[in-house]
Amino acid sequence: MLNSNTRYPYPLLRETTVDFEHTFFSGDLEVEREKDGFRIVPIFRVNNNEINQLIECGIFSFAVQIQCRSTYYRGVEYIENNKPFKIKSGLVHDLVELCPCIIAMQDLENYQIEDFVSAFKASKVHIYKNDVVGIGNVIKFRAYYKADEVKKPGSIITVKGVDNISRVRVDLNQPNINVELPMQQYEYYIKVGNATNDQVSLLTGLVSVPVLVMALNEIDINDESDFVDMPWYKSIRAILDKMANGDPAKIETLLEDKFKTVQEMLGDNLFLSLKILDERDW
Image (cartoon, rainbow, N blue to C red):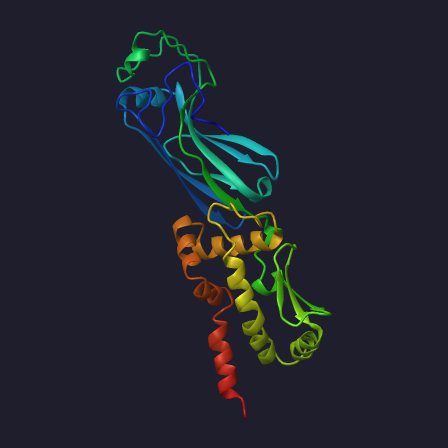
């Protein structure tokens, strides 16, 4: 992935004015999820008429570098007039990084812009074809194959009976979240779980709700969690992404009120459970 902190022998356009006195490169990207992939909407601009003219003439081009470590996919999409492009779902999986950039499409001798800082104004700058002349901030999102449809929350929880324990234990260090019940409680759990749908809904309220609230405490917006590689973590992240339509700010809001979010994930299970209890013939 491109790194704007690398020392370049020529002026580099960035999100801030470093090698230019006033000029900066704004490389915003929006990611829209579609059935067969991801629609990427660029909102690129440079506040410099000389550089914009180089772009219009085809000497420079806006571009997006794409990298996905899970599939080893690397690619570059060239952007014209901020036209959206698509990444097909089969190319990427899990974490995808998008780096906005500006690339030289041909050699350019004596590259001189009036807004260069003084250190470059006295230099003869030569740009070669495929040189990166601008770098924006990296945007990250999570992608899932069509076969990786978001699991129902209950399917990422495995309930087991364990001898020689007297209280419920939860183990997050497994592919599924393991809920360990004392053996007698587990026998009741199995008996009730094989009964009516109403009883299963009540079980979800008793077991899944507190366990999922606990799991949400381990979800980090920047994925700097000890459990980030666990399948249950990735599934919950996928659920949150879907609920928030990929908006990081909305994901943060969902994580602020975890109990409310779990209820939404489970289809208002508390309301359903209370309704079931109210309708029982005691």
